[in-house]
Length: 385
Length: 177
Image (cartoon, each protein chain N blue to C red):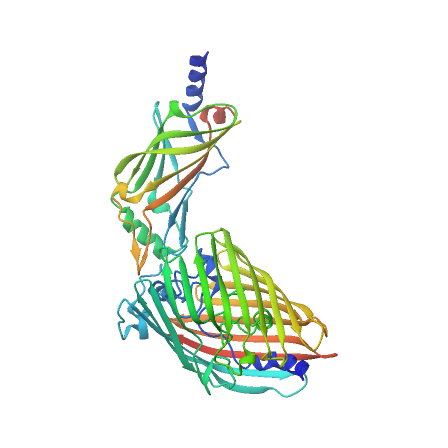
């Protein structure tokens, strides 16, 4: 049974798709860390006013042919319809699309999906930070669910100090590990359960952001939006990233958790992931991102399985706002061979805080002694406000 | 003997030019909050001066940080239309002229934003067929009457690090070729 779940779970995950902003390829502009644009110093989620402005200045296409002008009022909350006070950063994401999956020779199944309809807010009072999001999705069973299709991915309080270079947080927080990317269904994010979609955990984190070094470590207390308690993983996770040059960074990650009843395998599991990752922009239009993780499942009923997940992503910005994306990936769970995947995607940030994206994914996945060919596509529209 | 060496050194420095094939480079690093680092560069240095002084002049409008809007903000901050040039001047006699590698802290003067202030530049020199100089120094924007820019809550710190690398050779030697 657990084998079946292990095989099917990634397919089910394909039925959801990227959320929020987490664009590691911003390193092409010399942004090696995320904290100047995001409230979360490790990236994703609510934006700072500076981050909102970059959404217009650097992300979206400009049609005048001249150099970009100042960020317009549309960079503000609700495209400038409302002005929030300095102590409040309010925002939201709406992402919907169509997903088609073809498994083997079976017919294509198509679904319309509301991937994300989140409202979020961050309150800053002196050194204190308060952040929360609430939203809805059309899929059932999200680990961020608070009731049915109502989800809350993040809720945390924090204390910032040393000129905001250090932040201590407690609450439900994105697990710090590896590349923070919106492509949450890639093998490296699935295998390590460290995406920004719904695998946040409750716990306490410490983040440091310097010019050359930044990182975050988390003491994980478990996801208190799932029950019973046996499902909750406890342990630690963290990463440390070093930037020897303005368009190059390398990092290491480590995670060890234990759950009495693993939420995917239904047996006790001492789960480990340890890996390396890097981002490099050798030429401004091109960013290469790579991650390789060792993944260990120490379940109670079978010997430990040591596998590996890898990913190489190339982001080529043909014209400002228009991205061609290619991903090659693999996942070997330690038994039953290796799964491979290839993605091709085009994303266009066509307007102020508006983008569309179309992905085609071709995966050859292990399924016990046999293999499954999974061909899928995802077309989506996204606005953040 | 020492006097004779100094005379030789001065003679060698008297008619310098940038060596062909080794364009000069100048760069800066500014710092913002939460690990933000802004790097800028230009290759448009001009060599000048007189019998006593060697000067490097930079049209500040040629500095680029990789983000056009940020460049525009920088030129507004520097008032580049009023003060189009930054100039670093050093007494020729203070430049060491010894074969091989050497380093020295050399007093100089930087004119920026229309104001001239003394600076000490840390130089690494390599004297072979040409003279390679890599110089670094730091400045405080406020010393030059420049208000550090702030953009949507992101305030640049006043301390800025500058660097320049040039390869100089005797103009007469080049002509002789």
